[in-house]
Image 1 (cartoon, one colour):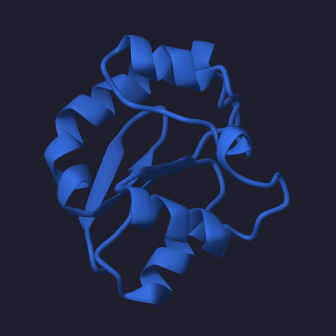
Image 2: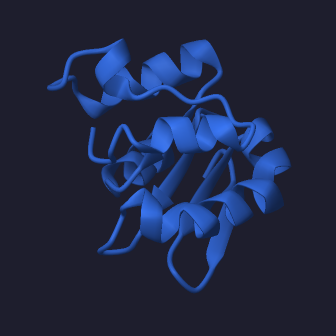
Length: 114
């Protein structure tokens, strides 16, 4: 919920399946519910909220993968080229289970479980 639904058509146009949580669940759902839904549906959580990385570390699960952006400007107009590049570079790791952290200058991937 902390990233714009405008990401969905951009990701889809570039070959990535995407759905915004507002279409799937309650706006006030706890992070654990979002993580469980992604795990159950083979999804990847794309977020600006650092809590998801912390939940992943504490869970010791091999998924779901989480992509967290660490920038002030999280608009698709600003970040889309950076995010797409990181997705293409780390797609295999995300399929296997990973925490991908993206900022304006680099991306880092950590294989799950953490």
